[in-house]
Image (cartoon, rainbow, N blue to C red):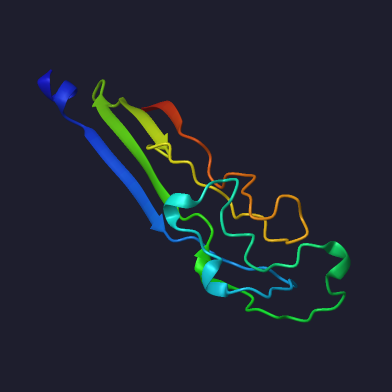
Length: 150
């Protein structure tokens, strides 16, 4: 009886830690200092992910019609939000009779409920330039399951 209560437990987890993707600005006119684009991590918000006031041409009438590039396509120091995620499961296996077993599962997807933002808008002529308007991962999901094996 004690083995039925204390035995048969399994725990598994998958932890993912990853830096964000470098941001690209496509066909943008930039006349400022690239070193001033990135904001310190503590100053970043969903409403202002990078410094939009350092030299981007924001007027749509002055944008180029063809693909002439004045700045690199990606900046290694300027990235979208990274991934910090833990998925975990707790499983209890119990023998009911000689030929029948039960398995109770509890799964935690995004167990710590970390908000993970999508990439910010990198179109200088957009009113949402520099803003994050979506999340890239779902909030915490907890699901339960019962499986009977016979």
